[in-house]
Image (cartoon, rainbow, N blue to C red):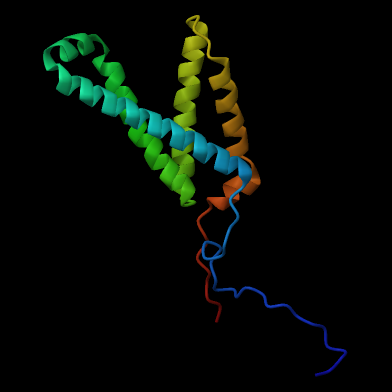
Length: 154
């Protein structure tokens, strides 16, 4: 071996995709995933409690629930969407990032409506704005980019 030849470290091949390389999940993304998971688990617990209440005394339950049925249906739908978004974020799927942005837009809109209606939830407002700013950082957005298809040059 020639001592004048520089030592070259192995470089990833041009055909290897960024998704196949191991990516370290940032701390902030872990926190968002933990918040989403806790939210989904609490929603699932609420769904179980509603189901148990419906089974225990169906007549009283449905008559008491009737005025709040729409709110309950929206909450259960958000529970399912939140669980799907958490899975998408965990797996670095682009649709997970977009889904999170849409969820945050919904939450921020409901926070604004609550604020102007006299029912401010400042903690929710701060968390939602912080998550939007964090998820829009270039380093975080790059985690969710789909790899470009490499063109073969002749």
